[in-house]
Image (tube, rainbow, N blue to C red; front, side):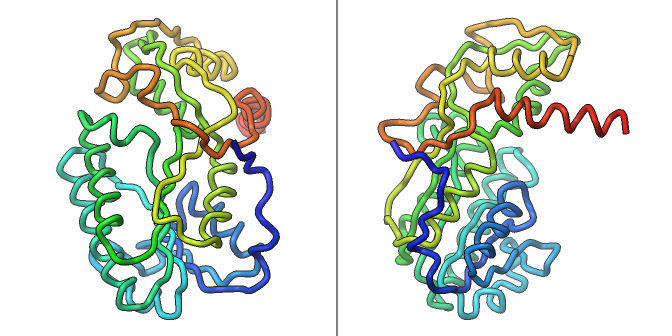
Length: 272
């Protein structure tokens, strides 16, 4: 297992042009900052900056001279047809533009367990995205990450009925977005793997317990009820569904560390 607490200094010697698709999002913003700190020319591409992977607007111009494209964009809708359209259309447009521009490394952020969760339309769409990348002739690295700490609030909300949050005790191994961005930056400036690497946090935690800790830290009055048949965004999960396989890259930040860092800031903003 690799701790991803340091970016490889050997990969910082020569700047190159890197385009980050989804460069204004949670991971994208941090990734753009990390890559610029390493001395690379980074384009933070998003519809807001005039680059739209769905319509193709601005893609060709953004990719001129780019050696690496990192796709961390996510669909604005998780509805089955909409999310499939997003990942298939953006994937095809991106890969075609990269082929024309002579891009040498396509990096995409995906999700641990994608191939095991195909009962979900979202994961079927991510699988379609991965398959497009593998079928392309562009050298690639697919990075599958476990769930982000920052997404725990949405997990709680999706499972809430009144004051009860009903969740299964399935294990997951969540990771903080800072550690994801650090690992993606390191991989993006390295050689293409033409394969998949997994990222995970340092500890497995049961889904119900994860949310219970989060609500407690937030002084949220909702109560978590453990139910082995409860669903995770509409699908049944077990201890293998959301956890990585052998030898993932491990981020150093523990959930409790993140809670202790983020909760004081939240309380200060509420009282300020």
